[in-house]
Amino acid sequence: MMVAQFLSEIRSIIGSLLAYLHRNAWTIIFIVGGAHLCYDNFLHPLIHKYQTHQSYKQATDPNRIAVLSPDMRRVRAKQQLAAQQRALQAEEERKERVKVERERKRVKSPEEERWDKMGGEGKKLGVVVDDDAGAELRQRR
Image 1 (cartoon, rainbow, N blue to C red):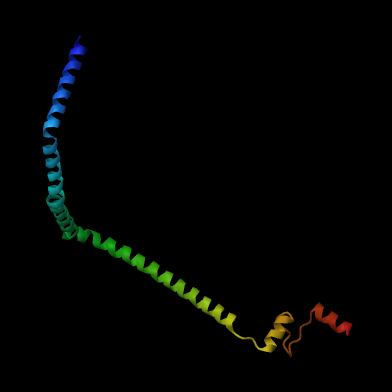
Image 2 (image 1 turned 90 degrees about the vertical axis):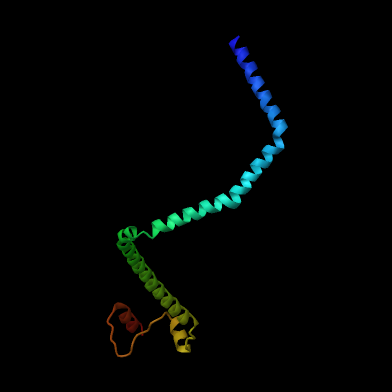
C-alpha cells in the first residue's frame, strides 16, 4: 500500500513538472540561451584574463625565478653541448658525402681506368717483393 501511494505521489510530481515545463518552455529556453550567451561573451573572457594574469604573476615571481635559474642554465648548457655535437657530426657527414660525390663525379684518366680493369694497384717500380706468387711468375717465363 505504501508503494502504491509512493508511486502515485511520484506520478503527480512528474505530472506537475511536465505541466510547468509546457507552460514555461519558451521562457526556460530563452533563459538558458541568454545565460550561455552571457557566459561565452562576458564571463569566460574575464575568467581567462584573470587566470592568465595569475599565471604570469606566478611565473615572474622573483623567488621562483631565483630557485629555477640554476637548473635552467644547467639544462640549457647540456642542450647546447648536445647541439654542438650534433652539428659537428652533421658537418663530418656532409664532408664525407661531398667527398664521395666528388670522387663519383671525377673523370678518371685512361691509365686509371686500365689499372682498375686489371685489378687495382700494381707493383711500384724499384720495390722488390719476394713472395711466392712473384717467384712462380718468374719461373714460368
